[in-house]
Structures are given as structure tokens and as C-alpha cells.
Image 1: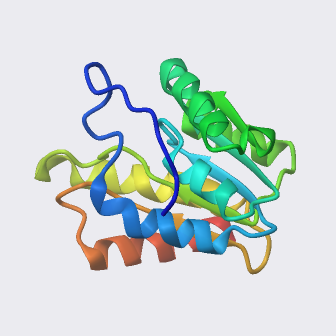
Image 2 (image 1 turned 135 degrees about the horizontal axis):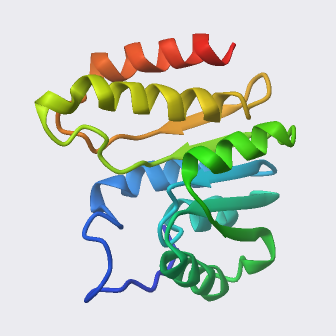
Image 3 (image 1 turned 45 degrees about the horizontal axis):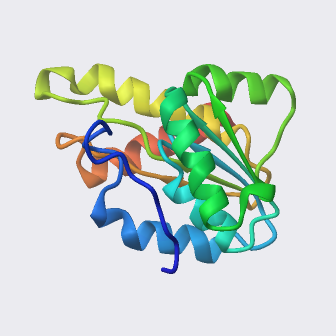
Length: 173
């Protein structure tokens, strides 16, 4: 979709840039015009950069890895959108709680967490994690805001995802 990215082929996360997210990245790009965007679990900035290229007013991207934030910053420069992108290194849950306590709001929030459910025995705990992170994100959306929520957990099925999002929305009010 016209974006260019540096990737760390030798030392990067194997899950850092899924090809199957190309349609989701394109959709985020299409939805971002004139919006304040938050990208959580941003890794090297694929969603953040696409949001900025789509005309986002501003993009705040959060990832726990300082090395990934450095590459994301380089990717923002490479794509000519560094003036609208900020990359923060923080724990996603903590960052969302802090943004909520500051009263911040974002028009579009992208969540692309790592697998919270790595084995079937982890499903209940993983579901609680997904519910919590999505509820925290939803609190930062104004009425009419957009949440793009992804999961790479093999044991999180479509209906589970939808049920979890409904529960998270109830939690968030």
C-alpha cells in the first residue's frame, strides 16, 4: 500500500510483521484521515505508519521494546511521517491506564497484542487478558470512535473474540 519498512531480519520478532495483516493495515490507513490514532503493541510501526500515511492528525504508538521503537522511528522518517508519529516504550496495560488517567481520547485505536493464549489450558487466563486490554482501550475512545482489535491466538475463535469484545465494551461503559 505504498509504505516502506526497515525490518530486523536477523534479530527481530518472528511475529513482528505478519503478511496476513496487509488488509488490516490498509483498512487502518483508510480509516485514519483527520483522526488521532493510538497503536498499541506497535512493534516496528506497521499500523502507526499506515495510519499516518492515511492522513492521521497524530499517531501515538506504544510497544514494550525500545529497539522496536527505534526501528519504528526510522520507519516514520523513511515514510515522511515522523512529524505526526510519536513512539513510546511502555507496558501496554500501564500505558493505557496512564492515558485514561490523563483523560486522553483517540479517534482510532489499534490493538495487535501477542498471543495471550498459547495453549488450550491458558484460554481462561488469556481471555481475561484480552478482555482487560480491550476494555482499557475502549475507555480511550469517544462516541463513534473506532477500535481495531486483533489476535494471533490459535485458541481464540471468532465467537470467543466477539463475546470478549462485547464483555469488554460493557466493562468500559
